[in-house]
Length: 426
Image (cartoon, rainbow, N blue to C red; front, side):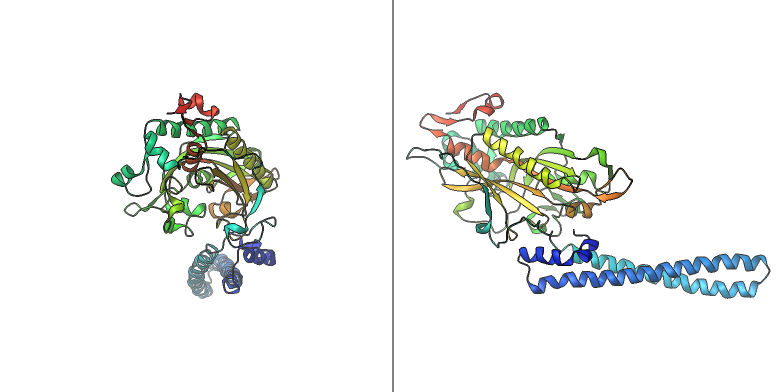
């Protein structure tokens, strides 16, 4: 969440940023309510501090008076101390109420977009940061979409997923399962070679963890919840991996901290219907390799570009047509300050499919998590957090199947041969 100090000192920048997210004048009123509540909190804190200081001062006098045999004067001061302690308790309770109210309001405010984020309301307003300049795959006239290819070559089964679980839970089979496993291993190997530590995190998290990265309260409706244990199935490995350093103070020399993880991801995707979500285009469970960095604020946007280049290399090695979009203010995620999306060309469907988001969150997540670093002078500051999909498998699989289909079968990208053990699906 945003820091109250930043809102106070840079109010106009925050307001302008929220307008870039298309916040209305009515929504923006929460900024003034936050500052007013914080003013009351600060005034209450001063009153509490003064009451405690006076109580301490009188307590010392009581000891001196008792030593001098002045019991009546000491008793009078004891009565004053009792009144001050009662007042202090009331002030502490009021402080807790104000802090909770302040947090509730702050949790509703999204991150402030970076100045380079374009204005806009919908995905159509996103800016193409890098377009595909080479020819697109030339497919035969009888080219099939990936869900038909899956039936033809027995690669994954959506109907069986319905039987076992429900719609949106594919069952991968045979070479389809091996292709899936090959992609996971390839993505992990590339991340490790790039200096990321491999993590195997839990697939369920508690409320504090989900809140730390901004999934709660913003995306609660999109998460699967285990009510009995009050745990959530993760929508991405970003959630548990970033939270590894929650409530930690790391030495500045340890930055950047680079971590990668493979996990299944679970998303309810409520309200997603229509032809555009057929097959693997949108599912409730999919596999993904995530890269996460904890970085110094002075280097976070350089690191964002480096992470974009990492994903770009993966796409090039898979020989898939792609483009990179810089998301506009109205299409960015709640916690992001700046996001690049990668889209792969689906040749049979003749449309772009999102396969990665690479984002810088500045201190938005770390403020929630109290993830800090200590600089060389001993000063403690909030770190910046970044993450990216490297990559999400479902739509990558869809693109590989569609783009590489031939009359003889589906060709496997050369970089995957050592992982799959086969060069073609036939």
